[in-house]
Amino acid sequence: MRFAVTKVCGGGAKARAGVLHIGGGGIGIETPALLLSTRKGLPSFVSCDLLASLPLPDSLLLHVCPTHFMEGPPLKTISNIGGLHRMLGLPDHILVAAAGDSIESLPSSEATNKFGASFDTPSGRRLVKPSDYMELVSCMKPNLWASLADEVPAWVTEKRNKISVDRTLCWLDACIALDTASGTNSFGVVVGGSSIEQRRLCATEVSKRNVSGFWISGFGFGENIDERCSLLNAVTDCLPPEKPRLVSRLGLPEEVLEGVAAGIDLFDSTYIYQLTMGGFALIFPIDMVERETQNGLFDNDGGDSTKINLRATTYRKDTSRLVDSCSCFTCQNHTRAYLNHLLNVHEMLAQILLEIHNTHHYLRFFRSIREAIKVGEFDLFRQQFVKKRRAHIAAAVL
Image 1 (cartoon, rainbow, N blue to C red):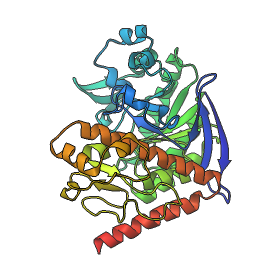
Image 2 (image 1 turned 30 degrees about the horizontal axis):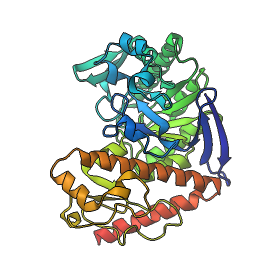
Image 3 (image 1 turned 90 degrees about the horizontal axis):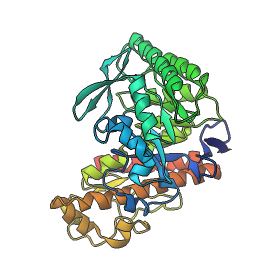
Image 4 (image 1 turned 90 degrees about the vertical axis):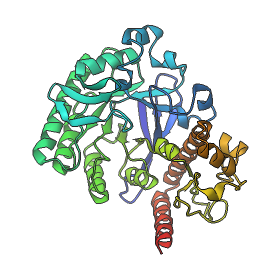
């Protein structure tokens, strides 16, 4: 794995653009970038053949959760097939393995102990030790993997935060020692809850290990916005600039912009999945040039300035596209009225078409962020986006 920072915003800002290369002649993935959330290797409603319709190479990054494969094909079978790339039929995609996906297999801080992390699985709660975890990783053969971590919510005590850091560092050392398949393509996990001191300590210690990058974990567990900003900056200040940083569970557009401003390169979240399951479609303007709202004024029927609720009756006779300027399969072939119909008759095609659009739209959002960084206008891009969003929310309230 090779990573290079190509542009850093001036004036002491941390936002940066870079390129991530996996393998000898692999395609370069520009950062900041999004890891698409998967369930057992594929996005929830997008099959292998439909993945090809998403923007390339932006859609090549997939987050896979090793604990999803604790039930299903035996690990030896996955290994004999040639790993997940061969089993899923995705030879060119970049699979990033990390435990916990915030959909169905979050670790539980109460059931976790010094021997391993506790996860919910289809057959009940199971304790996953570093040796078990690395056996999963070894058979899956991902391009990158993150070590096991003890994630804790924001409200735990300082003592519990310290225990979390100690366990995570211990498990990182164990995972590195047990790694026989992936070489050095490992991400060390940074935890510490809402304690800036423990976050800094963990980041400093993980930086001393032989890792290829850093997975900043433990967010989305109850911390407020101000806390998150301080924690992110405290962590990135302690990390070497030449290695990529990935943060989990920051999915809202404002949260992504906040992460980019703190120097984050990669994002893993289930935002697209949650939107799709709720019947929402992203519609917010992508580029700084797109000053006007898409398709006329924004709708207030269960949506906001970033998305619309297609279950609302107002779309029953709406023959317009989701977004006029969008080139995705859904916008090029179907109308809001058709999607409203599919949702209201509980047809799974609704989720398929929505996930295609939402993924396409959000990947374009990340592309616009990269372009704003390259021309030195990220701060303006962020300010305008947040300002317009707040103005719309204020108008809706009044």
